[in-house]
Length: 297
Image (cartoon, rainbow, N blue to C red; front, side, top):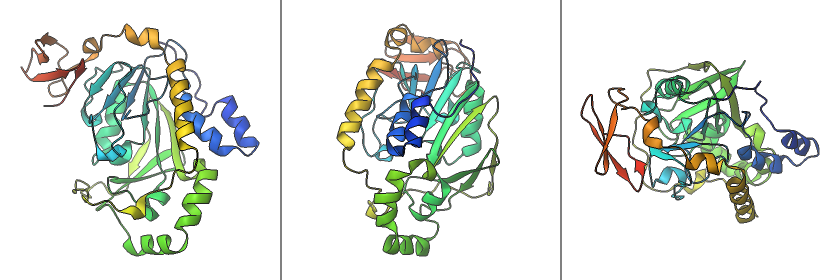
């Protein structure tokens, strides 16, 4: 495994673009930035339809889900289906773990973060800032997250919309200005970008709140943030760069089944039998679909 460098939260090019007023472009480039050396082994959880170029192994909870707006799952490198709260990997299997826009979907943030720091030595967490989640809530988001004094401050939501009257005022008075002008121009100010090493400092202000509520089935147009013109072009560029910046040859040599442990009993003795991985300790069986292990029971 590679040695972790001193964490720098932005690439040189990102810093230059921000200085000359091209913050939107700098924001797009963050998905190509990972502050580790070439030898580092990188996991990405909640990888979805646009994984980071540097990730060696991908994990997502679902092949298809509304929570990522039905974007198809990308599995262009070793991929596992499983839950972050029960990661199917041994302790310190990875040098670095990326969790971008996935923590806010968890109803058990303590377990989520505990698992990240169990399987990796360091990592990166990105979420919408708590301010935006309060005034512009998403129906599948269960947490409000911000940072104070180098610590993640987490508030569990008791429902998808915490303050309807505040949301109504926001939508009536400032939504168009905020989502079409301020956020696209200053995206860093409306998101949490948090690097950690060794241990994740966090505090849950209301740990007893139940955030396991069922998300509303109907689409609420009020919480959608316009993505702006040129999204297709930016996505095409990012896809091209992802393909050419990824460690493709290295990733092809990874046998994902050899990385896994049973998420239920934690045993590492998994045997491939037909189209399933079978834990030799607890005898649980996990299906393998098109080479992708489904690590949940």
